[in-house]
Image (cartoon, rainbow, N blue to C red):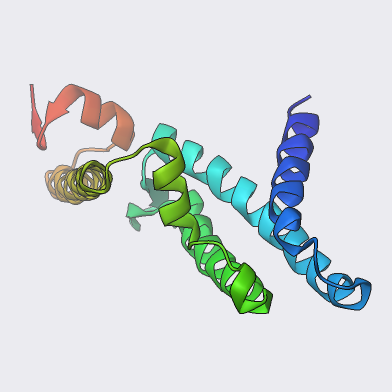
Length: 174
């Protein structure tokens, strides 16, 4: 069921982007359509990755053996960072393939105008997201420090980062 929903979202995004290229000839379209398909896929993948990062956080615990453990950037965040760069490249390429007189405004401006979004409010939201990510990373560092202290005291650590975070404030147990 989720796969059908995902395929539908990709198809809708594909159709949305494809409309910008309606006036191209068949030869040009045959070159552009695969890029459009990739862009649509990546856009939906980015939305899905954003949801995962929002739910699970930007960092995750790891353990590579008995004494090698800590926190690292989550796999979802790594995939997001790679995909967003590739997506930007494909969109930039597609934008450059449009005739100059038919190019729409850059997507982020178009979206803000359509949604009635205030650019200053968008900037504040971006800053809040950055601060939240920085707090999460700081907590992860504190967790690693706490793990090392526990290990040095001869204690076995069996608590996950999420459990530790919910029981502690800033690394100090409550």
